[in-house]
Amino acid sequence: MEDETRVLRWDAGRIEKLLPRFLAPISGGEMIGAANAIQGAADIALAKPPLADRIAREILKVSHARYQRPECRNVAAGHAIQSLDRFFQHIRKQKPVLAFVQAELANSRPATRRKAEKFCKKWA
Image (tube, rainbow, N blue to C red):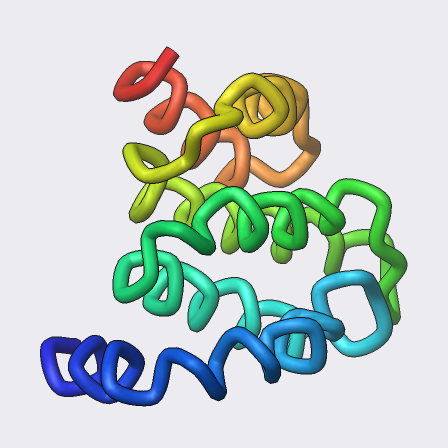
């Protein structure tokens, strides 16, 4: 993790240019790609806090994403909650994030509900 953060800081200019392409899978398609992008996005936000709001907005697209199966969206939402938790303190516009997580308190997937509950206890 430490080495990844150093590389991200060193190559920050390129990261900003590649960010739209890196985060594109979140919007839908293949859930594994989305999950990897969501998890990697937290590393980028921690290395480049000024990008935190931009990254959070992209992660929130999971709420309307369509993957192979409806259950995949529930899994991706759980990844999103964990990722947003990692860099929440760097997000300036926190209300949309809190609204997303609060909506996931009713998620049909128990693991995602638990992640939402934990997040809300910590940040809400």
